[in-house]
Length: 259
Image (cartoon, rainbow, N blue to C red; front, side, top):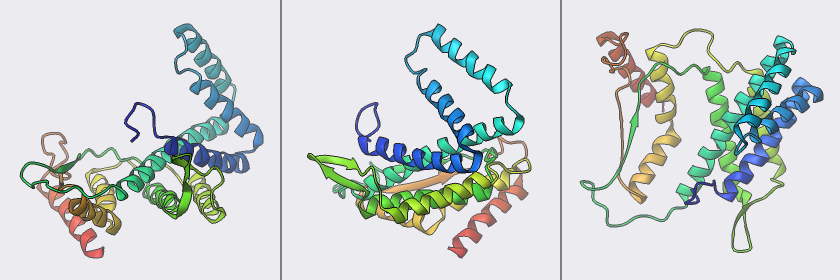
């Protein structure tokens, strides 16, 4: 976004603040002692960037030794904390990307034949996250985006910067959603199949706000096309046949009608 290998300052700040809120949730749910343990592991892992190989090995071995003496419940909470942190960081990136794209000036002079944006959506039945987890992080993303659009970004010395102390209502909304995410299973309780992959894909692509964003991008930026072989990848998935292809197409039709 910033044109370099480093993320934009606003995005870094958004991640910093959001992860801090997640830390509060973890502290309340798992206890202060467990939160300190998780935070120490996070700091050690962050410190591996640019570290010498031997120093990195020693750090990893020390963390592994620490994990081995913990209870299964404690190890589960650590894994859950890092899972939610990574999902939250992805939500921050998506919210910031949408925020910036909505402020991009219209592009004139493009031609449908020569220019455009093509989204190719893959079709592999590997979406193991639970539908409830997906729905919660969709709401988290909406909350982050709404906060940005309501003034979370301010002008400071000629460039954008993120307010370190956001508006209280948005903070309360996000903390509430993160508390729900902590208590909601992340993974499905059964092996996902082709229809699960199709339903997950359509639940994102065919939301009203997604369709509106794609249409707006087509009008203001460049023509947008969406292509997918979900339910039709007969070469890559031995479980795809004519029946499953029809079921996946039916899921898309139902989603469009419901929207």
